[in-house]
Length: 62
Length: 216
Image (cartoon, rainbow over all chains, first blue to last red; front, side, top):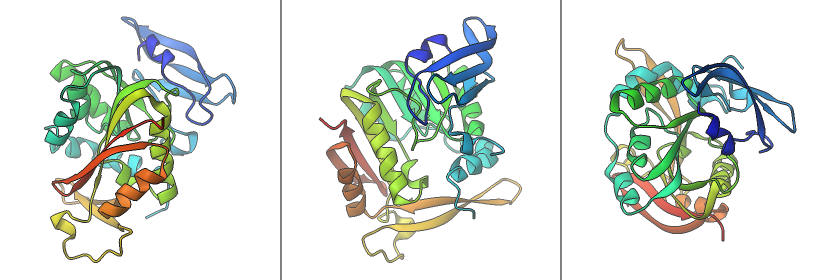
């Protein structure tokens, strides 16, 4: 994902801002990392360059 | 079939590659909605393999494409790379849109609403769309309708019908997908019950289509 997407995305549950913790970057894109809600503290993974902002109970394996 | 909000996303994960192969071209109704419209941020909610995100990319500076199926998002990523269009892919639920209020100028929400259940969740999803639309923003919402030839013999009491439609994989395995097939009057009523402003609606090719804006 592009870092500029941070201006648009939010926590799906309470709509508060997210904080980005990038593990791997490539050519300006974030390939893997974590997005954490600044209010409720829920964390959302970024995998293969795609942020997974599904509610936690809808994620794979949930 | 479990009554699980994740069902549609997980179902599409199982059929993503084959489904995507059969969904090559955008629908003409989406192209005519976008004709003459543009905005800074476009949203394709329930983007599937990205065929409409691709069209939207010509009408918005940036297109965010959201789907509950990570399998379909992988198909959309492949399509974007092959066809050379830019889109920001996000895994998300149409009933809990992970975008800030008023961030979207132009949206398409095509053939997705009918996978949500129950009705409260469908209305909640329409309210979420109203929340993310910027003032003056516009969206096209479509859903399968009981006027489709496929349901010609089904009786409906005006409240639509809940059904399961099988997807047959190349190997013969079938995967059931939940649909709430809308009675046209019910589609209009649900939009009016939501926080969206209903601007116009029509029936076309067995689907209900509505042009909507945020509540003023």
